[in-house]
Length: 112
Image (spheres, rainbow, N blue to C red):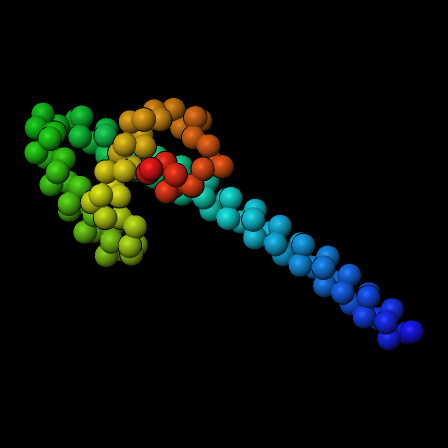
């Protein structure tokens, strides 16, 4: 009987700890997603602002994204392909006000 009570207490303790860990992981994932969205939005903003400051923005922009992609990938790893930088640009174009971004949606949702 005492062993059954110990097992129940152990299972309850495990369940409570598991609940805490899972909740913390969800919070971390949400915070990471939010930070990435705002970072990518700001990268898009910087790219747009840079392009608009030049007269030959179409030609210049294509080359800029290619070179920028190379440098960022070397420094920070994957995730900064030319295509991804174009998605960041579009994120800013489609959501010019950062406050309209929803942290409930992931980066891949915005790309779709």
